Every structure is written in structure tokens, then in C-alpha cells.
Amino acid sequence: MKFFIDTANLDQIREAEELGVLDGVTTNPSLMAKEGITGKNNILKHYVEICNIAQGDVSAEVIGTTFDEMIKEGEELADLHEQIVVKVPMIRDGVKALRYFSLNGIRTNCTLVFSPGQALLAAKAGATYVSPFIGRLDDISSDGLRLIAEIREIYDNYAFETQILAASVRHAMHIIDCARLGADVMTGPLSSIESLLKHPLTDSGLEKFLADYRKGNA
Ligand code: E4P
Image (cartoon, rainbow, N blue to C red; front, side, top):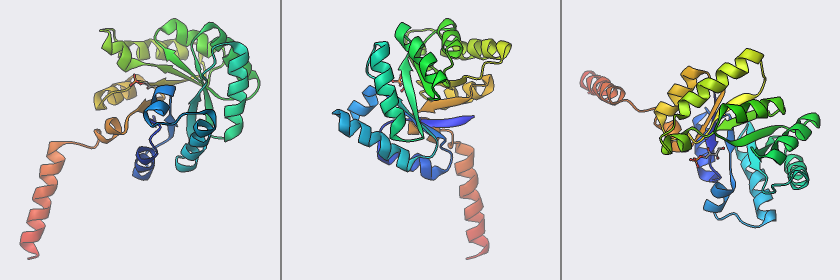
């Protein structure tokens, strides 16, 4: 399972990269705004900075909502760096854009996916990644993990190559459940990745080992 970090914060990306388990980065317009990155040139520059810190794929989202706008923006984003994956929303023109990018060798991440039907369309259009937002489904008392299982079943039935990128991950249990269900990738905040580290028996066990060592080596 690949681990992506879902942020535009350079320090957090650096920290995750240093941990040695990071496979890529996802961003979205809200995450860029949260870091105060505004204006086209600054936004493009920030994507390049992310690529220079992290190894692996970096999703950069188009803002346009028509086919022509998405193609123009997507081509510009893809030209920025070889690590860039163009993030395209699951809307009618987005599906057409996914097809266009796929035929033209540009990798894509189909975002804002909330149903198995949308995931099926994304795969048929040739998306590299599909991003089901599990946390946002849970937020409205729907079952985010069930969506992952349904997409896995559909993709396996037809050997679609589109990778399932479980998005809107909020905590360690989301990651573990997604891994059990066979999601190819998960993207979440640094805190969700770090929370995999923690177990009270690890902490108390280490404390005891070190105390015993100190007793014998005082
Ligand atoms: C995915 O690529 C999105 O950036 C993201 O996972 C959305 O997560 P949120 O629901 O926590 O905003």
C-alpha cells in the first residue's frame, strides 16, 4: 500500500519524507489556500517545491470546470515536473478530460468520488488514480469503507488498472481498514500516518527494557 500525505505544508511533507515511508503527496485548492498560497505563479512554484522535497507522485488540481479549461491547465501542470499527476473533478467535462489526458500520456487523479458508479466511469476514462473520499462520507453517516470495498470488487472483476487512492482519511483505523480492503494508496494528514506508530505496550515495554539495561550497566 502506498502512503501519500494530504497537505500543501512543506514542513509536514519534509517530516513525512524523512520518516522514510512516503510515496507521494496530494493537494487540493483548500489545502493550498490554508498555506496562504495564492496567485497562479505562486501556486505553480509551490507545486515544484513540493516535487523537490517529496519523491513520488504529486497531485495538482485543476480549477477550470470546462473541458478546454481543464486541458489547458492540466497540460501546464504536467509540464511543471515529471512527478505531477493532474487532479480532475468527477464532473461530465472531467470525464472527457480524463480520457484526453490518458490518450496523451498525462497521469491523472479523479477527485471528489463518492459512489461506485463514479469510480467505474473514472476507470473507463483511463484515470491513473481514483479518489473516493471516505471521511466525508462518514461525516454524513454514510459508509466510506464500504465504497472502497465496492470499488475494489468492480476493478478486480474487470482488471482495471486505475489505482484506488483512499482519500479524506482521518485516522489510523481508516488506514488499516483500507489496507485490509485492498486500497492501492491512502492519503491523509501527517497525524494519521504518525498515529500508526503508537501503542502503549511499545512505550511501557521500551521503558522497562531501558530501565533493566541501566540497572545492569550502572
Ligand atoms: C484528496 O485528495 C483530498 O485532498 C482530501 O483527501 C480531502 O480530505 P478532507 O475531507 O479531509 O478535506
